Image (cartoon, rainbow, N blue to C red; front, side, top):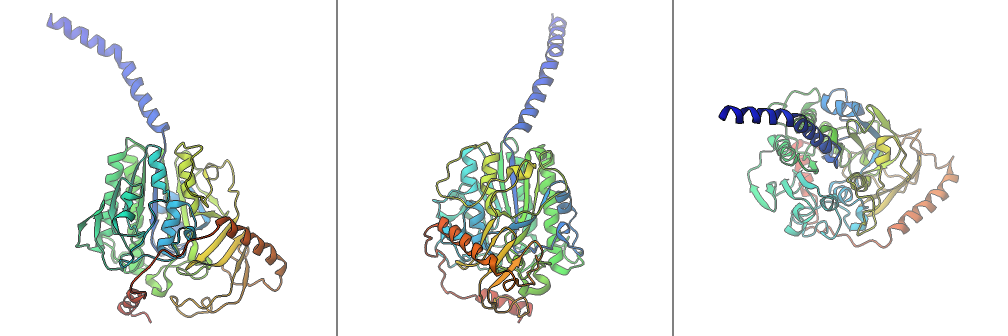
Length: 467
C-alpha cells in the first residue's frame, strides 16, 4: 500500500511538473512585465566633467561608464537651482523652487522646510502601489513635519543636512539612530542601506532615492579608496561613488529586477570651484555651483533601462530635472494622474524609448529667488550681475552686463552676441514674460535662518587654506 501511494505521488508530481514549470515561468514573466522600479542616484556638487562619460581622464569610473554605455547620456540636462535645497525641492515636486518659496539652502537653524502639502515623487508612486525609500542627504527641513516619512517615503536613513553643517547625525525614519558619524564611511553606509532596500522590496515595485553626501566638501573616502585616484582626494571620492553605483546595479541583478528598473544618475548642481582641486570640474562649461552660468546648473545625467533604452545613445536636447516626476508617474501606469499643484516638468518616457522628443524648449535660471538668465532653444540671455562672492576672482567670474549666447555653438559661454544678434532679444524677453506669467504669483521665501551668515563656509575655507 505504501509503495502504491509513493508511486501515485510520483506520477502526480510528474503530471504536474509541466504545469508547475509553466506557472513559475509565467510568474517570472509577470514580474518582469509589471510596473518598473525606479532608482534615482543624486550626487552632491559633482561637476559636469567628473566622470568618464563626460570627459574625466584622471578619475576612473568604470561602473558609471558601463551605465552610460548601456543607456542614454543627456548632455543638456538642468538642475532646478545652482545650490542644494532648491534643487531637491524641484526634483521631488517637478516644480520651480520659486513656486515653493525655497530660494536657498536650509540650515540646522532653519525652522521651515518642504511643505507636506506638495506632491512628491514618493507621494505619487505610493498611490500607484510602490514601496518608497530614501537613503542619504535630505536637506529639506529637519523638523518632524518636513522629514521624508511625512513626504511620501516609507523608509529613510541618512544625514538630514549637508555634511559641512552642524547636526551631522544618521536618522532612521524620524529619529536619530547615531550621533557619531564617521564620514569616511558615509558612501559605504549609504550603499549598504540601498542594497538592503532593494533586497527587501524586490517583490514589489519600488522607488529608491539614493542621495549621496559626496562630493560636497569636506571630502571623505574610505580606506579602500583613499589615496588611490590620480586626482587626489576628490578623485578618490568619485571613484568610491562609482563603486557604489556598481553595487546598486549588482543588487538589482541579484534580485532579478535589473531589466525592470530605470536607473538615473546625476548631480544636484555644478562643482564648488572655490575649493580648487577639491571642488571638481565643470569643463568645458563656465563657472560652477552658485552661478547661473552653464557650469552651475547643467549637470551630467545618465538614464539606464536594459531592453527599453537603446544602449550608447546621446540626447543633446534641453531636458530638466523637473521631468523626473511626470516621467516616473507615467511609467508607473498612472495615465491620467491629477497633480494637486501645477508642475513644470514634462513626461520624457518617449524620449527614453526613442519614440518622441521633448516638447518644451525653455528654462528659467533662478538664483536666490531672482531670474538671472533664460534659455529658449539654443539661445540664452543672462542679465546684469555682480561677481559671485563664493567663487575665486577670474575672467569668468567678473561683473557682467547683459550677455547673449548661442549654446549650440558656444557652450563655454565665451562670446557675447548681444551686439550682433540684438534682434533675438525681444523674442526671448517676451517668452520669459510668458513663462513667468505661467508661474503666477510666487510666495515669499520660506528659508529663514539665524544667524544669517555663511560662517560654516568661511571655517571650511580656513581649514583648507582657501582665501
